[in-house]
Image (cartoon, rainbow, N blue to C red):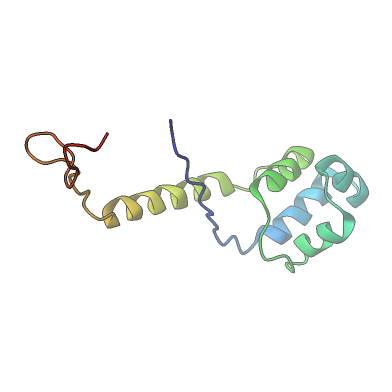
Length: 114
């Protein structure tokens, strides 16, 4: 069985709000249409493009990119951040303790333990 750890990775993309709005203008798509196609509300859209939303979920950004036929270049930055975090964690893990003694039996277990 595998155990999965889900990590939260965030990166700062300062020009993303304006880039999204510029892409919408270039695509010639109304705010209503983008919201409907991307599955976001108009109030949320305006929070995003005005920079009032502190973070946007990656799946939401991908939907917006798809609707606007745009690529805001966030994937490579997120990939780098995930790799850096994994490397940091790998190097900061404590050494694993050996749970068996040299004869192969579990340390601290008595002969009657299952």
